[in-house]
Each structure stands twice: as C-alpha cells, then as structure tokens.
Length: 532
Image: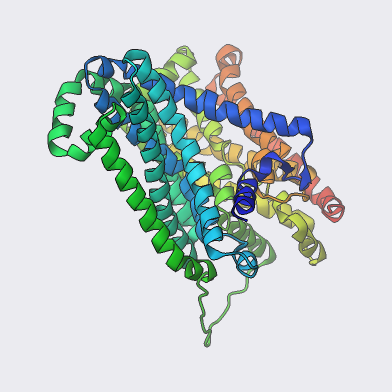
C-alpha cells in the first residue's frame, strides 16, 4: 500500500509531464520524452551547471586547507535551494491535499498515508538540494585526495542536508498552510512571498561573483570566526571532510529530528487533514449596496478575477510592482542610466527622449493581463453569454483593467524619469503622455487578440496565462514594437525631429486603437456567442 501511495503522490507532482493541461489527455510517447528531457536539462544542465561553476570558483578555499568552510558555504546554499524548491509543494501535498477526505474514507492505515506524503516531500527536497550538493562533492574530489572516510563524510553531509531541507520544508509548509487557511487575501500574500523569494534570488545571482571573491580572499579570517563563534557550523563542514565526530553527531541528530517529526505528525495529521479552511460569517444589517453602471460592474469583475489568482498576478502583472521600484532606483542611479541611454541614442538630437519613451513602453509591454482574460472565463463562459449585456463592453472592460493597472505605475515611472533626467517642459510632456497612449493601444490590442484567440478548453489556468498564443504575441510583440520605436528614430526618423516623430507615432497608435475599438464594437457579439 505504501508504494502505491508514493507512486500516486509522485504522479500528481509530475502530472504535467504525462498529461496535456490544455485538453486533459495523455501525451504521446515522444511528447513525454521531450518533457522529461527538458526538465532534466533545466535541473542538471542549467541549475546544476550554475552551481558547478560556483563550486569551481571556490576551489581556492579547498586548496588553502579550509575544505570544511567550502562545504559549509555550499551546504547552506543547498539548504536554501532545497527549501525554496519544495516548500510550496509541501503545504499542498502534506497539509492541504485535495484528496485527504477521499483517502481517509478508505481502509488505508493512517501511518501509510503519512509516510507516503512525507516520502514525496523528502524526494522533492532531495532533488533540489542534489543540484547543489553533488557538484560540490565532485569539485571537492577533483582538488582533494580521495579516502574512505571522505567518501562516507561527503555522502553523510548530503544526507544530513536533505533531512534538514525535509524538516524545514515541513515546518514552513505548515506555516504556509496555516496562513492559507486563515488569511482572507491569501493570493496577495502568496504574491508578496513569491516576490520576496525572487528578490533574494536575484540579489544572490547578481552578487554571487563578488561574494565568492570576498570569501576566497578572506577565507582564513571568516574560517576562524566561524570556528570560534559557531562551532556546530564548523563541525558541519568537517563532517564532509571525514570527521568521525561530525558524521556520528549529525547523523544522530538527523535520526532524532526525523523521529520527532514523525511523532508529531502521527498525532496531529488527522486533525490537520480534516480541518477545513476558515469560513468567515458576517451579518448584514441595514447595509446599503451601491449600484454601478454596467461597464463599471464588468470592470470590477475583471479586477476581482485578477486578484483572485496568484498565478495570474505573478505572470501577467508583476510589472505593476517592478515599475515603481525601478523608478526609485532610477533616481538613485540616474548617472549610470543616462550614460547607457546616451550610448544607445548615439548622441542623435532628440534621441535621448525617444529612447526613454521606447524604454518605458518596453516595460509597460510586460503587463498583459487582458490577453488571457477571455480564455480564463473557461467553462463558465455561458454565464456571460446568457447575460443581457453587449459583448463589446465585456471586451473593453478587460482592456480597461489592463490599462488602469499599467497606466498608473507607468505614470509614476515617467515622473521619476523626469526628476532623474531633469528634462525640459516639452520633453516632460512627451514622456508623460506618449507612454499612456501606448498603454491604451496595448490594452486594446491584448483584449482583441485574447478575444479572437480565446481557448476555453483548459484544465489548468497556467495554460492560458503562460502558454497561450495571445500572451506570446502581446509580450514579444510589445517588446518588438518598443524597440522599433526607439531604433527607427536613431537610424531614419531623426530627420523629422523628435517632436514630429513622436507626434506621428502617437497619431498612429491612436488610429490603431480606434480601428481595434471599431472591430470590437461590430464583431465582439458574434465572437462571444460562437465561443464554446
């Protein structure tokens, strides 16, 4: 029974490799092989190669006789990656699994159910931590001599890290599950946590080389400090070099941790698994509901749909937060950015303003909420079809949602640009108004392409959000149009002058926006009624 349950858990985790989320049908053998090969390339080739390069950069630490310090650093990195990769899977697998009620109603021993969930959590953490630990061990043995104790120590070090990842993932997964069941706006919280993890990742990625150089240059100083102030970390690194005390001590600690975790879960799992999410009861006494006009009601519906999905917000609207942050950073680092833009504009008269407008438009293109909005109606499209509303209003509401959520941060970023670059009044007006017209055009275009390329036959919302043709066209098309606006002026359009050039492009954007609105007004009803 335990092996069957483990297979079920792993099949659920890797289900997308074997079933197409678009139509919920089994993939062909060739498709399965390609999916598995791509995943292996990502984990082994990309991530594994990245941490292999990191380990090779730390080889001077091994040569200086501080191999334990090398293993301590790589171990902490492996611990972080393992937790980052498995914690969100842990809370849905172990604590808030959708099949808990079904499995608990069957004659399945509770201990087998708990063990299968724990094994799947451990294997996921093991996979992510192995991406760091195995390259670290390989690089160590290319520099240091090989002995039986070192082999045992390296394997024990890897095992201990995987158990620590497993334990911390279970603890943090419980926190995430508890918050998911208690918090009212849990999707916003999920987005916030994801952004924090992304920020930590990018800070580490861009600072990795500098940090490695600092570690290599100050190995002796840092090594002595760690050994004196944090002896357990020193022993953790020595374990990988074959220290018998480190091996026995940490393996014993790992066994105790696993036993304690099993003891706690075996006595609390049933309560956790059968606890439903908190339902908030509220009484309405003498409350007046505000009536909205039809378009505003549809617009509020689109905002509610956007904020109800963490996947939707992260993949289609992350730039809402990035642009204000980028604007503030621009003010701080204005001199460096001015130098880059001047180099791109090749000192062409007016080129600086045009390239700034093109750059803002490129950033605005990263918001594409309206592109998958119609597809996200899914099987509930019949509700919209049955309502006495004009289809054009529905499509325009989706465009309006994207425009509002994009135009506001774009306006803030434009103001930051004006402050940082200290531009003239005319240039400032172009930088304020031109990107707004671009935002209007891209919002209408995204809603239009999302309407004519709507795909309602999906089983996972990530398909229309990340893999649909409409999203691809809007994202890469927006980048292409922005680049053309900038570089066409540098090489050809400068003959017209900055003002005339931007006015002509603005007129073109307004004209295309009018054509799209005209098409929506006359063809949206037919398109909507034929969707199924």
